[in-house]
Amino acid sequence: MSWIDWTIIAAYLLWIIVDGLRLTRRSHGIEDYFLASRSLPWWAIGLSVMATQLSAITMIGTTGQAYANGMRFIQMYFALPLAMIILSLTLVPFFTHARVFTAYEYLERRFDAKTRTLTSFLFLMSRAMSTGVVISAPAVVLSVMLGLSVTATCLLIAVPTAVYTMFGGVQAVTWTDVKQMFLIVFGLVAVVIALVLGLPDEVGVGGALSIAGTTGRLQMFDFSFDLTRQYTFWSGTIAALFLFCSYFGTDQSQVQRYLTARSVDEARTSLLMSGYWKIPLQALVLLVGVFMFVFYLFTPAPMLFNPVHDQRVRASARAADYEAVEQRFGEAAAARRTAALALADADRAGDAGRLAASSEAFLASDAAVLTARNDAREIVRDVSGDRAYTDVNYVFPTFVLTHLPVGLVGLLIAAIFAAAMSTISSELASLSTATVIDFYRRYVAADAPDAKLLMVSRIATGFWGLFAATVAVYAAELGSLIEVVNRFGSLFYGSILGVFILAIGFPRATGTGAFVGLLGGMAAVGYVASSTDIAFLWHNVVGAVAVCVIGMTVSLLTPRPASA
Image (cartoon, rainbow, N blue to C red):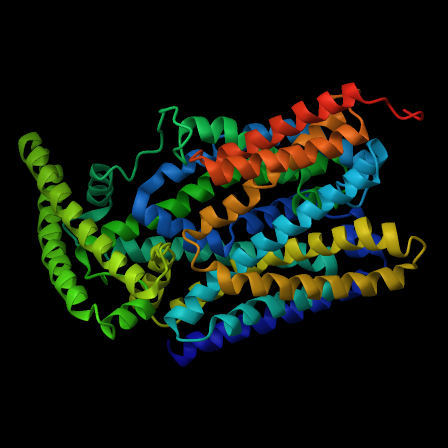
């Protein structure tokens, strides 16, 4: 990278810290700090939630996944609009009228302290781990592509975000997110333009989409009802509905957003805005990955997109085997390029016979390329001992650093920082809120003044920032980052949702039933995740159903409290 790119990145980091700290003066009490005195406009909340959703994981992990598998990941979001409607009619007005700081406060009012504490603790663990994965995504760009240590890059991302979140509170989080949202979208559009301009003149956008369609990368619907398949129409409309209802309805990082709204109507509008814009924005991100696949059909691509492992294998005893695979890869890639050009020409000419023959030749050569890449990855796994190795998270960073012009590289990496920071800041704010409200104020200092609570909140924000940075050091090699964060969440989300379903939908449910049901739901999810091949999205259904069944069974078998 040139000094111009580094200057852009440094200027962005400095600006975002200064701008966030500028809002410190608006956070005088805990209601200012945690909920912005419930005074934020709906459009700012909506943009902030959207910026949180367009995380660095989305920019790096989702684009890499689309490069490998195409658009089918979009099926995961089919249930999102319905989930937003359900929540707008139920939990949004419910929490707003309850005047709570956290979603889990209500559980003590409805059930008891132990149910509130356990649910909040599960939120803290799941959200802290997920925040670590969010930090690891841009760390991939700097540590692997630029040769910096993972620890250093994780701290470079986490510390500035923690600083402005610690002092500015949710005001700084929201208004910083609004600005970052525009940078993120600009970066994505710039990449799409660069990819299109990088295609051969005889291919064009239409030819690129035709080639991608031949490989199945434009397929957005899979109606097979197979519980072991990650992304199908049914997992995206049934299982994902549970995930989204839990995430947007019971996860403090999202509940805290609409609790800052001026009214119930504005809270609803902000939620619906973010929900209905998520699918087209996600489609844009996936198209980036699809166009990268087509781009690398005509532009020489590395056999492996992670240069660190490439160098390690070349220096190992398997170097000769690796070079033999590389030769096969080069020959297959050249044949695929020729076949892709022929396919684009046949498509442009509208010759059905040539199109069928060209498609067959292209798919055969593409399979040969994939076989060579798989063989290379297997050698890496053998040399490194990492059986989960994949390079899907390095595709987007490689394109940014090797094919974009000076200046735009810095802007794109700044956009990745923006995407990471917008997500991290909101999650750190919610972790701090739950820590202080559900634990410190509840069990340690119930009558503490606002000044003391603000100090503890800032300490908690710093702690969770360092905790998440530590998790991030180990998260980058876990596989597709977008799947990693959803796998983490799916271990907890369904069970937490089940507790709130008991609280609101089952008047006969008791605190003991809810507590035992929550433990049973977590046990059921743990068993399914470790002992079966059921796709992780369905874990949310398992958790919610198990909590409700076990919770109501225990509630009916135990006496109600005297005060109930």
